[in-house]
Image 1 (cartoon, rainbow, N blue to C red):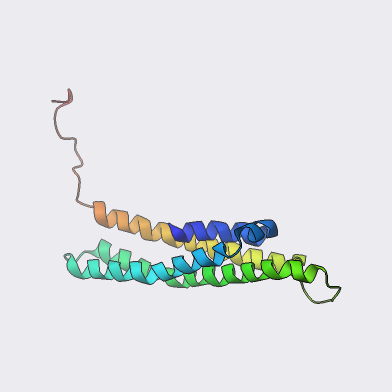
Image 2 (tube, rainbow, N blue to C red):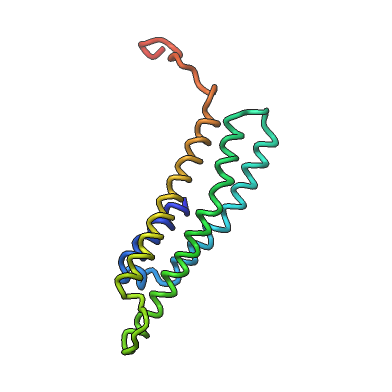
Length: 153
């Protein structure tokens, strides 16, 4: 749940500097918590894989889970960049230097595109992992025909 939340907050903060200022240090903090939760979650999935009967669906779920760490790392790095740039923007706004500022449109576009791409990739990966987990948990766990009579008895 933290990965999609972080992705949404990152995109909002990258596209709207005011959102970055409002989120403040919360953005990289949540991204860091999400990043650190990925190895814990994948470790739990690998433990489960070792403790259930050989099942291709469970194996697929754990394999997909192993691919989430790079997306979570990307979210964290971009969240830190957006937070850092948002902090520096007010200090730089009074300077008359010719250097690139966070408020400069090309910088915001590049960071926004990267943030959107990583956020979409992370959310799609979480969806795929969750879907494979649901399939692994529910396959052969229900009857394809209704049980009981039509009148409820």
